[in-house]
Image (cartoon, rainbow over all chains, first blue to last red; front, side, top):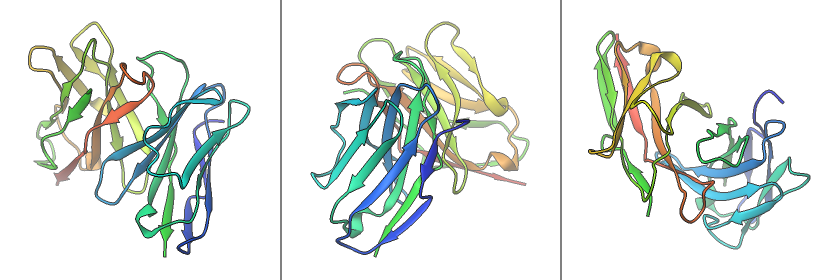
Length: 115
Length: 115
């Protein structure tokens, strides 16, 4: 696609429910990243994929958070038993090559509100 | 640990005046530095990057950044600010030691350009 696409753009869920956030990266991009941006905060790294594997999961806040990527393309971030502190904007990014100088392109994010 | 710091939470500037947004970095090895901008309710947009070569890097929307190795800085600049430049600006460094793919972001600097 032309850009990184994330869905839904907004999600309101009740505390304790599970949610799935989807990211469709730019076609051909092998690297995919998930970040979280809380109100008034910077960007918090969650997880990074190279192809279908996740060499870095160090940012996942708890075992309620998981992510997968299939076919080297679409990724889903799943949050189980959501808590109010999970409310944030979840940003996905992708980049073309496994080179340190390659910039990442971001989607517009999914705003998650846990009530 | 590799990191970037943005010492100013907010920068205020009058339209037409020069704009500078500060960023300092701490890395082991060669630095790979990036600037992103986030407009309200939008995802992050890539502005420019420093990989190697000339210390003055030119990017999108008339922005440039100066890499200074001795001062470990990568300040973002624009000679003449526009009201439309009002946004949240993030400096980032590519983490190359523990996970080459991850971008480590600063806390962000809110830029307010007044007419």
